[in-house]
Structure formats: C-alpha cells, structure tokens
Image (cartoon, rainbow, N blue to C red):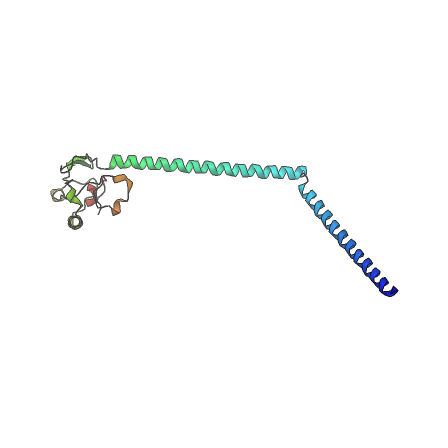
Length: 192
C-alpha cells in the first residue's frame, strides 16, 4: 500500500513540476514577445527620424511631380485637340448646308472657289449608288495640291450625301462625304 501511495505522490510531483516548467516557458515567451514589440514600437532615433522624414518628403515630391505631369499631359492633349479642330475648320472645304434636295454647296479648294454638285436627297444612302461612286473615284485623275483645276478633272461630279456629323467618328468607314481637303479625288472630301 505504501509503495503504491509513494508512486502516486511521485507521479503527482512530476506532473506539478512539468506544469510549472510549462508555465515558466510560456511566461518567458510572452515576456520576450512583449520586449520585441516594445522595441519595435519605440520612438526612432534622430538619424532614423531624419531618414523617415526624407522618405516621406521624397514620396510627396514624387506624388506632386506625377500629378503635375498628368495635368501637363491633359493640357497638351486638349491643346492638340483644339489645334486639330481649328485646322480642320480652316483647311476643310467650308460646306454650307442647304435643305434636303438642294444642290451645289460651295466648297473651297486651294484658295479657288468652285461648285461641287452634291445631291442631299435621302436616296443618296443607296448602297449600289455608292459602289458606282467608288468606281468613278478610282478612275478620277489625281490632282496635286496647288495644281490647276483642269477641265477633265472638273467633269467628274458625284451624287453623294454630305455627312451630317462629320467630326465625331472615323471617316475611313463612313460612306458619306466629309469637309476635308486632300489630294486627288479625296480633295472633295469623299471617303474612298
């Protein structure tokens, strides 16, 4: 009986010792963790403070420079767009629109005023008619800018409808005439 009681007591003592050791280890771990966090939270030394301030200043300066560059780029794009619109207005043949069915709005080509016969009737959107027009355009003589308007160039007249909203889309895919001066048959502003 005594031996069994002694064994039980020894086991209890061992368990208690193990528990105490575990608690001590746990407390030490917590203490270490607390010390580490405290060191991390501690106010930086003067040199570190200066470095942090410099980093912050650099970040602010980079942000400011990027913002200025973005604003400058936007202004340049707006100016280019404005210049492009002005150029289109100045160089483009100045079509004066008339009611549907009217002919001959006056266009300007290389400083010479001439009548370009344009039928603005609704039938101008006919696909077959435009197929014929493109064939005629391919056969038309090419006139260099500044050249004289020869009779065989002037004899080409096309039945086309002027584009009602010329500056808001891609002219290459649009089947209507646009107020744009260029070389050759495109001088009249037709999409070819």
